[in-house]
Structure formats: C-alpha cells, structure tokens
Amino acid sequence: MTYLIGIPAIAVLTILQTSLVGHLRLIEGRPDLVMLAVVAWALTGRTHEAMVFGFAGGLFLDAFSAVPLGVSAAALVIVAVIASYSEGQFWGINPIMQLAAVLLGTVVYNLIIISALLVIGQPLDLQLALGRIVLPSLFVNLILTLPSVQLTEGLHNLLHPPRVAA
Image (cartoon, rainbow, N blue to C red; front, top):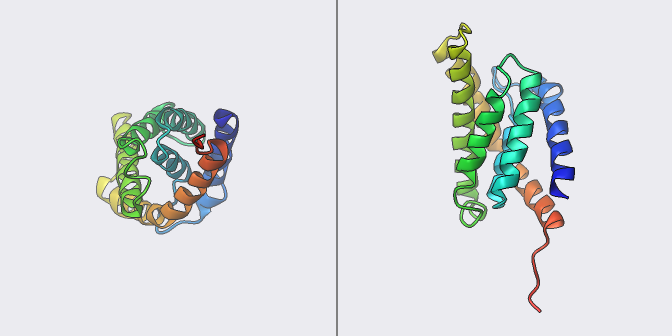
C-alpha cells in the first residue's frame, strides 16, 4: 500500500520540483522536494521504503536534468541510508536532528551531483556552484524541513497506524 501511494507522490514531487518550484529560486538554489521527501520518510524508520522512493525519485529527476541517468537515484539512496541511520528512534523525534539530517542530506546529494558532472567533463566552476547553488538550496531546504517532516509523519501514521496492545 505504501508503494502505491509513495511512488506516484514522488512522481508528483518531481514534476513540481522541475516545473513550478524550479522557478522559485534563492540566488540559483531551489528546494529539493524529492530529497526532502526521501529524508522525511527515512526519518520515520522505514529505511527500505525510503531507499525505493529515493531510487524512483532519482530516476524521475534524471529524466528532467543533464545529470547522467542513475546519478540522482544513487545519491538519493545514499541520502536515505544516511538519514535512516537511527531507524527513526532518535532523529524522528528531535527537530534539531531532523534539520541536521536535511543539512547532511542536502550536502551529500549536491556533492554527488557536482562530482558526477565533473567526472563526465561538464565545465563547472566549483566555487560558484557551492556559493550560488548548494548554500542557497541548503537554506531553502532547512526552511522546508519541519513542514515536510510533519506531513510525512502524518502520512506515515495514516498508512501505518500504531499498534494497540490488547
């Protein structure tokens, strides 16, 4: 049931990220809605599902970008693994740790994308990319962290209600 709702939701987030939200920029940075969703789902303790959503979302994002196919998918799977390190027991509770997970996820995600572009020979000014894309994206993602985690926790509780002891 989770995949039937999650994969289409990730597809919708990809479309929003690459079209509507792509025009809402801070300098050259923009929100990474798919990465936020993957991190937020990983914080619920559902690691395997977060990795599947990251893989699917990465493939969707690669279809709309100049990044080689599979790079965003690999980056989002790595981000999901990092964010789910505590298996939802510590990071999912503390808002500071939620912010730390998004901070780390944003940095790792962007560094993997930048590294892949450098490997394929894409001309890229690293200092400019870090200052005009990564840092503003980090700021915007941090602003959107708490709302995205709250929405994800609500969806998680709807799909996986807590067990009641008999």
